[in-house]
Length: 387
View 1 (tube, rainbow, N blue to C red):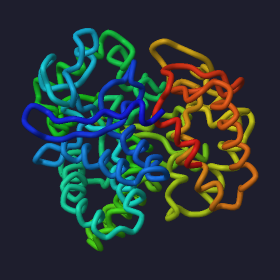
View 2: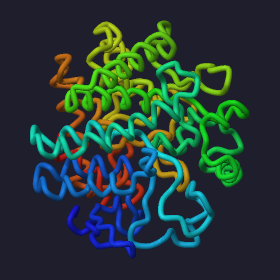
View 3: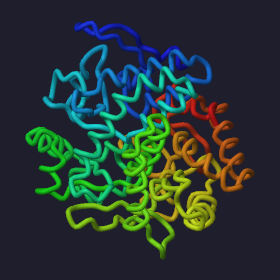
View 4: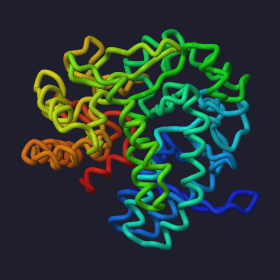
């Protein structure tokens, strides 16, 4: 299936590319975190292809260090979809002008698998990318990076964004104006944060940012990456952790108020071994394994089943409001195993494997029934093989 989604060639300027479409019929371009997940699976079967996937992502990086959310290697976005992308101009752009959850450092380390030559190849571009995130996406200098558009987390239509973006949410007509407003200001986080309230410090984005910074520190030995990781982790604990609820919540708007909605993003810091063990165990025992909240029959729901916004099945425009996604399990199952919840971890993996057996590699699955929804032949759902 991954080979069927592989696209390889050269752009008109001679730049080579090779990447896996997330789903050839529905998502024909290269997406940032999708490619990282594809490479993580490819490394099990064809390490050379895994490395080319990540190299292609790096070739799309701007000179300043922005890795685009979406790259149009083999053709521009079609006219029906072009207005949905946050590009510098509505039509004709090579890539989007915004980024996505920064998994690249973690993916590069996993794909390198100890190969010093591949590690050294990545050090300069990886440093440029994570330096850009520190410089451009942390305008208040608190150690947490901000997202400007809801899809920069990859969780486009999560209900946690409804209170922040309201009529400009990803699935509403006002999203077009949100994108246009960013175009007029050159996608500058400093300009947007100073003037508007439609931005937030996202827990999932920052947990993966810290995890990737630690990976970059291990590969490079550069102390600044470890310092930034520790700073982000400390800020998550000090400012996003809700002791009463036992969850982490995003900080939104210029006032940095907490968005008190329980989504799987609230569990994401579980991936950080540096967090206090009692905090990690609360995330697991009070939420992840609770059958009223995230302990669903299939996978891990993207929203707590107690939330009023929880929707288990298919919704044409809103797909992060309840269904289980394989990348969620891929991130959270490893810490479950590390903390000694091996049986529970295996139950989650078996439930997804059974859903894939029955429904195929679908974009997401109903957490109550296992029914597959969204795109077919969806690339990162092959992470179940890695699990």
